[in-house]
Length: 227
Ligand SMILES: N[C@@H](CCC(=O)N[C@@H](CS)C(=O)NCC(=O)O)C(=O)O
Image 1 (tube, rainbow, N blue to C red):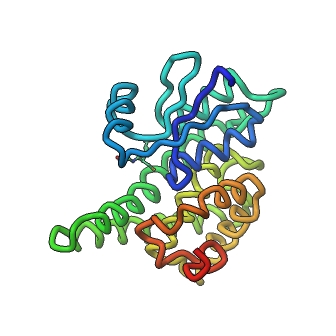
Image 2 (cartoon, rainbow, N blue to C red):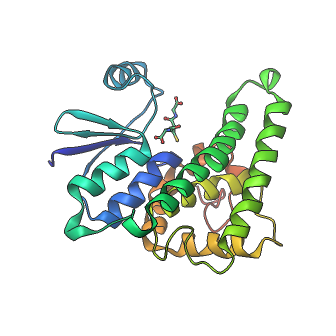
């Protein structure tokens, strides 16, 4: 047991963002898998953190919510040997691109998922169309940003890339990355090849059969005939 517990689910994009950071910061954390489909577990969870959103870090009994705050907290208090995902020289850029990925890639991606989870008659094609427009805008913005860069902010893999990896992974299942956006596509491949990202995708693999957008997952990530 460590003093740190992360309440999470391997399929959750925001949890994956934090899991990538935990690996890179070299922090030892107890992982507690949440099943919000179980009413008793959901009630206990809401008592701990009322938004009902994961991930949630608990540090010596104190809840630390919100993926970006969790990563900042881990970096400030628990990182091994001065490892950093928010280097001083690029801190504002890192935080900006972390926000942009959360707001303009994660959020519309979640809107697609939320719509698929609704009963057929309750689905809202207008909200899905808005989500598609936002993602399109974001893809073009990220493609421009990546011209001449390896990672999205600063010289090294940062918190912004932790946000980018799961956001783009799931977003691409709903709106494929446009082939003409070569910087975006090359960045996606760099992210997927990164060992900390690949490890998190591997952890999620047994659960992809439950992902509502699984029809859009590339075969290299999920083979329905093997599931
Ligand atoms: N702003 C939050 C967003 C977290 C979030 O949306 N988590 C999703 C999973 S990816 C969740 O908990 N969904 C469960 C629900 O809404 O019931 C963060 O950065 O941690």
